[in-house]
Length: 426
Image (spheres, helix red, strand yellow):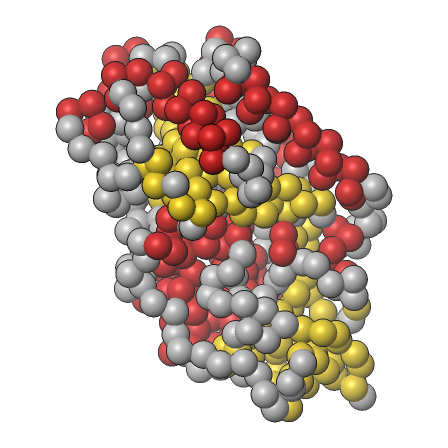
């Protein structure tokens, strides 16, 4: 089992040819971070004729934008009514509406720019692993259908056919959603942004931001960008102490393993329509197939610096529980990405200083949330209209005891996975 991200290993879409920033330049908007949020912002600004430069600390992609599950999900992690309870009626329903429409925006960009990211539009499946989970899915179905969402609670033989397992009694099919190779999608956004005139600099870690007259100077080790506006799009990979985004989330992780390509009658019965899926466990398992037939399993928690025997034991346990007829599986890749969590599981859009916009806390919904936040930032910067953003710009308190939040989450995830390996839990 190689410690390498499947999506990068199998990607056919290439990133544009770039180089580090090695001089002092001037632009209207400087975007810090070349993931989905930053590239969506740059693309939509460039489409509007705004000069924009993107500074990425690594390659395209480096962080969670290329290492996630590749689910093009609708909405936030929590059910619609709970979002309203957390954010209030106006902001909550706004988030429900904008993020409910987010998959359509992703697929529209893929089609408009011809991004080869192996997109599927057959929906996603939320799997009820026990009676309590099935009841939760029915509650979500009722809340979503009340808002006009095309969702369906599938049961019985229809459920077994869609999932490929008899262990799931009910599954919530969200027909708005789908899957992609996230590395290819991110690279496609980069290609499109550059084609529209955006300047993209890689291996250009930002060392600080300072006021320069009535503008902002964003510095790297070998150059700087002087800009009217700055967008901070570093999210879960924010590390520098000077970066205000760091205080607005706590870091979690998501690990994945991928098999070698599978074939045969049993393998072909697993998610035959290629929906991405995840179950209702507190520490969820995600399940999907890639374009070459691999079985891709994931869960909350870090797989980095874990023994391969531990990861294989966990993956074997999940695969054999849901798909016992599959037999022994040879696992080919394993990788882990960072997730930016917030205590209420909702994102944060804020302005740390005048002229600087920032976003973080996607809580595992980065493909769609990052895309629409980028579109919203572009419209807000050019017109002052924030209607495309999931939430208005607000002031948020820094999250206290961030390391303790991270430790508590990771400890709980690890304990649960050990229980799965020992067959204490499943």
